[in-house]
Image (tube, rainbow, N blue to C red; front, side):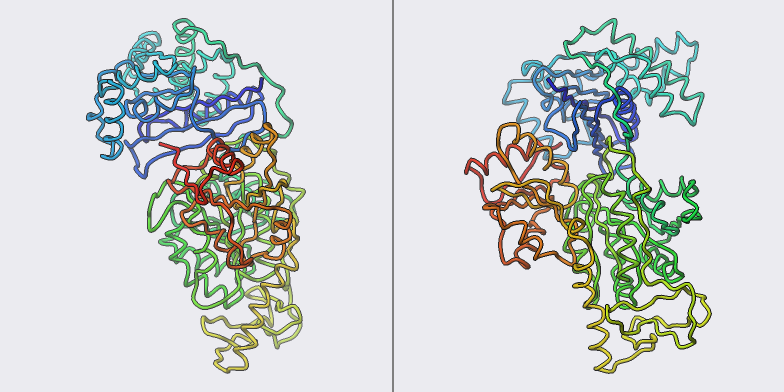
Length: 636
């Protein structure tokens, strides 16, 4: 029987939940298991609820499931929010001092949730306390283990003769993960290795946390009843990495030769730029010299302006943002469009409108990326479906920007950015760099930056080349860049730029425009980070003899309508799956193919899709019991 186990830890924002989850993930990765973890948190620096769920399996996994097998809670809110989500025969480890905390005592609850929780407990004749919700979980088959985290710290403090430890509540996270690993009887040396790895830059802190980890581990093995579940060590798959989601684009930029990135801090895009700042100088191949200069600007307008200016010097340049930041970039995006400037915008989507759900997931901004700007100009909008794809796609989008001389908007999102996953090691030997018509020298003193050519692409000069003088303006211009309002010139320039859209579809290989994952009479069409949950759900259905097709659209502008039409030709039922309210890809299909998807599966709660949600809904569609528009709601 294949192991498939989900572990969750929760606590107040700033209490080390992510650190504990990283320790747990590393332990099982070192044991040869596949990992998929997701972090959820409020738009609050400290105090609001934060939790991290880590799924562990022997087989490849690309998404989360509904529910958890083990819950670690060192605050009342975690128990109230997630206790009823523990699966049958699951386990809860909680701080025993919380039992008498009432629902009304948790000041971080919003009124809607508080009312729903109160009604649930009342309907089950349970008191509105942690004890009440735990009784309900116990009746549902959950094994309950209590421990006083503060008492453990006091004992450890006395043992180590270190009075400071007993008051270090921030160590609750290490205690929680260690208690769970002890209960699961995981080899203790794996725990020690992982704790040392996580705190490797702070030796004294590492030693203290190793002591706490071993103490809690031994407590669990001695005090808690053994469970039947056993995790045997597996052979670690060759060239496998455990990665944070945003590593893919960051490392892709370094390998692609991006040497300038500007940004203004915004969730969830900031993590990528912070990673680049931390790793500005890496050893790379000799033909890609230099490091990536990363600059935090005063706002997003400055960020894209600096990236465009850097690109004009001939340097591969990018900026990184989320929805509200992208909107501020639109005027400069249009400037890049009319001046045919290659620049990459990495767009980490979250839930809108406006600031919406600032730290939550969404695919709300597809049509914004495609349609934003003043006037009409070509751009490429390209989407990645997972961490591994994002690395190779990042190297490609720089080629697209250079070759076609257009701004490229690379669509990512919070689901990918906040995930922790095992994937194959990136292979930089597969990365090819194509700078397009970038000139190293100009022989004539009559350089025409926007000269008309048969393919609509003009040779591009780096700033500072001899004889390479040209002009840039936000106004329409002639072939040398001088402002022109001549109607004939206007037609020629618009034709020149817009013809690029057909040229892009012609030159980008079909395999890079759309991926056909599987075939079937029922065919899913989707884009971006829904890829993982969709593939996992399809595999679950395949195990029951149900075949579902899946077409993933990566190139979203210009839209590959003829290719998509061909891929749909053998499918009777089209199912659009997206993390937004209106089915934005569906509207592109309707616009370009004059065909409406037969079903929509949508989620817009700010929580990522799970494969089990999709499995249940797809099965309803196959059985003919689904609505045309199915809305997914799972997630705390």
